Structure formats: C-alpha cells, structure tokens
Length: 114
Image (cartoon, rainbow, N blue to C red; front, side):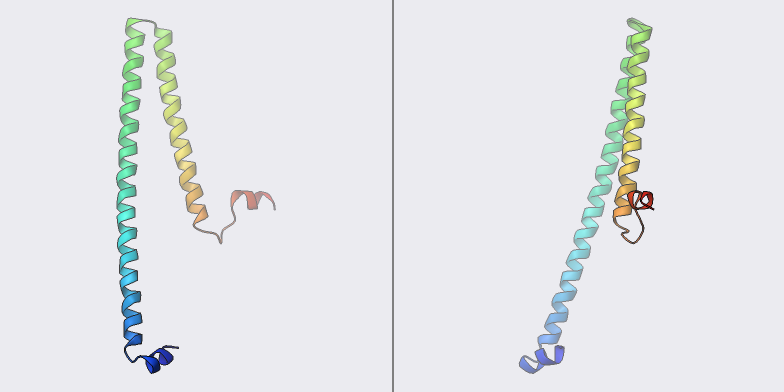
C-alpha cells in the first residue's frame, strides 16, 4: 500500500510514518498526564475523607463529653459507618472498572446465568 503512495509522492511513506509517530507520542503524553492527575485526585479524596472522618470523631467526642453520651455514640457510629460504606463502594467501583477493561472474562452477571 505504501508503494502506491510512494509512486504518487516519493516522500509520502516517511511523512505518514512521521505523522503516526508524532500522534503516538502525543497520545502517550496525554495518557501520562491523565494518569498523573487521577493519582492526585485519588490522594486529594483520601485526604478529604480523612479530614471529614477526624472532624466527625472530634464532634462525636465533644457531644459525648459535653452533652449526651448516647448522642455522641450515635454521631461517632454514623461517622464510622459512613466511612466503611464509602470504602466498600469505592472498592466495588474499582473492581467493576477492572472488569470492564477485560471483556474476555465473564462478569458476575454472565457467571450467574450459567
């Protein structure tokens, strides 16, 4: 096929390969930046979750000491249940993302059909 291009324009094959190489480098650079930014977002999310969890536990402790032990226990329990729920949800999302990137393996729904 490249021979046909070369017949029409002798430099065409080298230009086409140069364009393909440039496009490949651009795509790899873009993917690298995207990965870097997703890592930063992940750490920011973990840090934000930590701040919220600590604030919730401080509030629960304050309520338990100054107001009502039962109310403080409820606030602290809800804080911890929320954290566990977010962790489980995030873990499931990661597993689903990994499964979607491997279409050759059956999903849970496909496995349940057999």
